[in-house]
Length: 499
Image 1: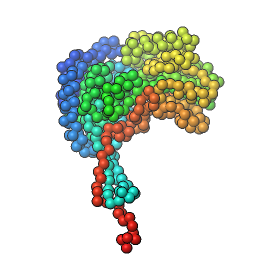
Image 2: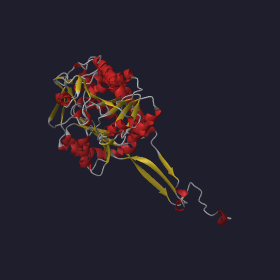
Image 3: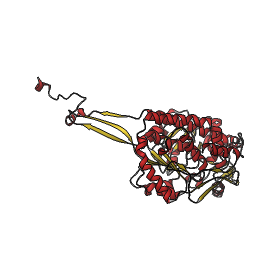
Image 4: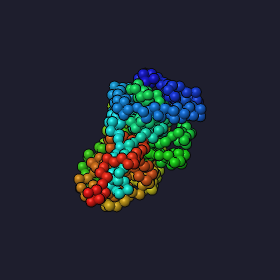
């Protein structure tokens, strides 16, 4: 399966990406097709999961969970290490598949596959260190004479629901950590990237992951809702919009959840910042993947004394970006996921202009390719400031007072990550303490992530942390063993009585 998917991407042929259920590739549901946003033609095809297929997958997961849990951590780690190496071997073909299905520039796709390799390697390392505790029960009188221990046991069946914007690496996080923890995993991939999702699953199977450890189902929200509600599922990891995340939580009921949701990330540029560096960084990270990232640079607040200088430098840096064919290694900005997404950038920038903002660059589209758009001075209640653009648009706004701009940033309903350009350590510590975000990037924009560092948000940006170590905690349960009358501790409570 992996070879056929990669070959289809290399040949620009239609990639057949069937579901993988109960150890077999293939499905009988309605056809689900994907039109490449840049090529504007059919690029991949799969089938939507039927109710019978979902039921079969859930039954197979329940029966296979104990088998996967019985695999030694060393075995699970070895599989993940081999998958890491295989991702690097096939990085160019996988990046090409991303470009064809999603319009993601090859240079961005190569970066994503490098992160897939890193993520699998980190998951392997974390699998090797899963353990437990020896509890200090003898520190209290009622515990004297006893011993107690814990270990982290697999939760059982995990459900991973992945988005289109980084379908390979976010699947690597969810599936890699779940397998490292000893679970079986149901994957509900994004309809926009069936071939990329199937390729990652096939890569893991080729690396030695047992069939009982993973199944792949395709489809839209109805398939996801069916799986979320299933009693067989113990834990759900979802990445997507805040609205869909709320629906996942409602349907799931009393299940363990990790929700990584939306954002409209802010970056602050202080008066002591290197304006040229900040402008170049904002241009690179504001339009990479056409801004389709929950931590993409959306709002840039610049001290009023440097505002015009920043705007000039930023516009010049954006002018240097190459927009076009995502398969061209020199392209910086490719297509958005579809024409409706690109039209959102055009519409929201026009609405901001009607409300008094300046559209300094962009505000146009060619099909699904939105021109990198700069909106200067939009009102605080405009969509480009208050809502999540998730597109090739950056709003630039002036500020006068640092404490006030921190409060302005916190007015957002989101709180995923923020960026800060300053050399003032007091401002850094103040921002870290005051900003209602899960992370703060100093010396860079909001759009920076290391896959082995905790990542996640607050407010409508979700809860839980997506890094292998944190996710393994979510994917496991603590089991306690208490031995009465057997103590590894001293059990004398009155030395005088024994004398």
